[in-house]
Image (tube, rainbow, N blue to C red; front, side, top):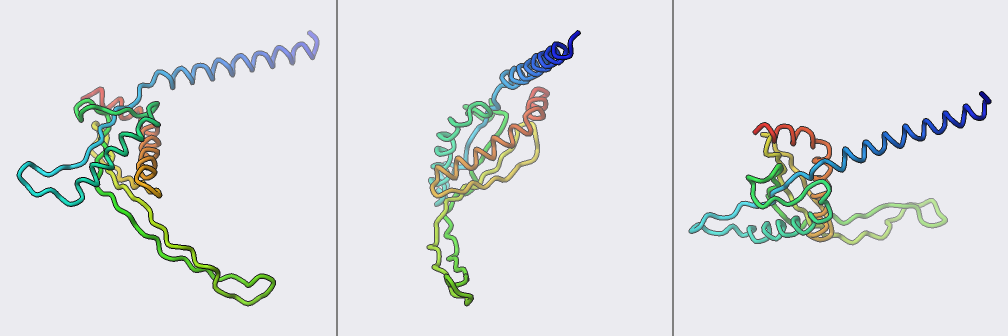
Length: 178
């Protein structure tokens, strides 16, 4: 057999095997069902005083639920904790102001140091949540940060999505045993 023909056949074989491997991996990923997540926050018992931050935490539940639409391949909303694989509890939400930053730098064209213009203080939204798998005893703490509550919620869900991808098999296996 000619050397060129043999190399061509070998190349075609590698392409076919590679295509089959990619197709098999895509089918495996496509057959994984999204994990069901229940998003909630603690509310005051009837007849007891309502904590001052309860409304804010409930707003974050709404923000997280709205942002969940961007993550449907990995996690979807569960209607109740009984139907969920994961629980996401909003623990706190707050704004924090950053400290004013002042840097010292050389003057343009010179060697002497002088203060550079100070950066204006910025305000960031923080949402703190506890993530737990129904099949696990442990809870992971996640803090989302952003310029708005919606960005902070999206930051939380990106971390949840990453955790869900890394722990998918364990969550599903343990969930089937319960």
